[in-house]
Length: 359
Image (cartoon, rainbow, N blue to C red):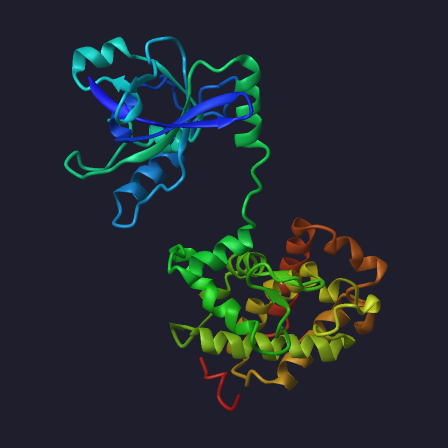
């Protein structure tokens, strides 16, 4: 047997213990759960998430700082006391002992982290030293189990996804996909007309656009695929194009991104309007390449005026008129409207050329 020393924790009338152990050993005495199996007090185990954690743990920086929460299922695990080192439990270390402790632990929180160390899933080599902290409740009552479950699953406020991404950028932990867009979005936020309008962290900006939202818009609109003479555009080129393009929308329709309180601007200064405009941009870029024209304010404004005219609405009411309002109520209708508008722009004319010369 392996002796694991614990630190006793008392909260009101409830007691628990804090310890540490190799999770490759700990998982062997945890309740066996099948992937996707319905559980009474846990979400079904996601095989993809478990494998993702296993891959992460095997990486150079794969740390799991949060403790797992377990409960003993019966009296096979008993807390004893050492006069010198204090509380401890004995856990198996040999094969015949593991068989005796099968299903001895219920996982109350952190199941995906623990089961990522299953022998058939983990990628971490056996010779690598790796420990994980755990909180242990000894045969908790039904009421205690309920309180533990609620605390672990409902009373923990999740970190805002936008703020989490900011932290990840500060710690150089962005995913490859996030890295593709973070610098572009950050640079847009430092340049007019979107200067100061994008929420990069947890700052409060009235009618601001969350960085994650803008990144999702750019990705769905395939802005990263815009190219010139066979080469993908650089972030610097994209920023110039997007800023010039959005300034043109301001002048053609008559609104200002800087003044988000403009009631008459309607969806134009909201995320739905920005979605539409950015999703239409690639079609306009195709048109300037096809016509071998300069990508300048005159060309962009002329194209936008022709687009709006073909839709039979007043330019100043493009984002507010009854005919168009329904398009900006949700992402799906906005996408459909943007694709329809893109088709119109492509039909306005059809050639390779350097359209960035002079801007």
